[in-house]
Length: 241
Length: 241
DNA sequence: TTTAGATGTTGTACTTTTTACACTAATTAT
DNA sequence: ATAATTAGTGTAAAAAGTACAACATCTAAA
Image 1: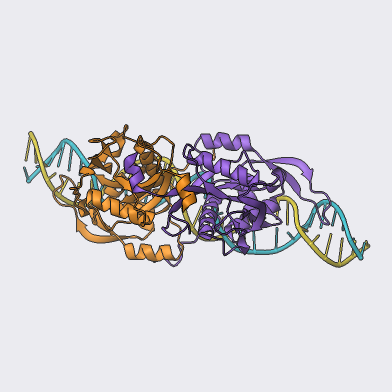
Image 2: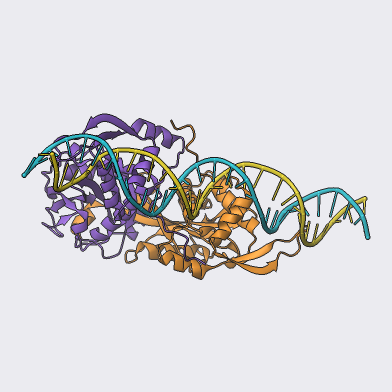
């Protein structure tokens, strides 16, 4: 270990980008920092990795300590290591991301490092501290990519949802509009939705049917190597000589 | 910085997975280690990141120092940080990968940390030191994915190549067989190949036409957000009730 | 109670892409 | 000359993607 000690005065952290969806808007969970640097600023929930802790474990622990959220699947996205990204020294950070149903979790925090935790609209953020804006953007890109190749959208919706809600979610993530009939055809043809035979209540128009996601079937298809893909929005070959 | 120093005795490294293609076989560039741990074992070319060096810069520098290869585009893939992955202490490593044309580079090394550098068949490796096998596998998965969505195969072939060579490359990466006529139709329909109006020489059969990759057009299409995709091999919906 | 307003739901024809499949062409070695 | 070997190509059927508009169901307001 002597060699290593000579080499470095450094540290590593994890940062979590947790996406949620609410009021037709894509949100991300931020904490109000309780420590320097950037004390009292809204930032991604992230902290140091313990010496005897794997990265994935650290990400989960930090998320729980800072926001109260536990039992979510976190996926590693990218590592950020610009020399001056942390004002106190050389700190590289491994970014993780996850999708959760906002309603299913109660966000709470009472730690010294995170004074509050709150959902913020992704589209309204643009000056997060450190390189957190860049990290958020990278995770958003990942989400955008992922939603086209896997039916991950369901992770963000309540257990029961309407097709229109699902479409709005896709539109928010892909930042594009989708054609209603084709979207529904495509989604339903995956056979991953269970029609609950219930309808919305309390809306001032024809109530929509409610569906839930067939997670069991999805996992079985995944295990079989099935390929999910959403095609709409793909550019055409026209104009390429 | 005091806080950071208290937190950690740790280090980070970069590891490079450089793929090449030769004799119908997918290869990876390994070095023979000149230092403990795992002295004299074949391993991925990787080393410590300097305190004042960005991760991407470190990856490039390490690759050049250990193998003589410079001027390649390295892409970050994943970070590996299992607590005991390095026998000397806590060391996390950021894995990078790249594709190169073996013929275009002369591999050489004369450093103390890397005694030799050589190409090895990916399929024959299975006990690399550290967690390098896992890193290699992750990069191979990335390549497999990437080849379906971008015409990256050309990066691995000589400047002039035949359609059959290209097909064999795709088959090696995807670990599957492709149907000749459909493959050619698909590839040619991308309009990214320039027919050189030359043919192979010195083969004991009908010589194949030679093509080169139209890099300019590719980069222009990329800039326009064009979507490249190789479809064959996708599973069918059959059997999904 | 009628109607306006809002959103939900569905079908079809057309185009494009994918797939499956087998024969002829060009060259060298014997 | 011919055998051996790989190169090169066309087409029809199936599947998927796209574009498009009318009717259905509910509430709220007149």
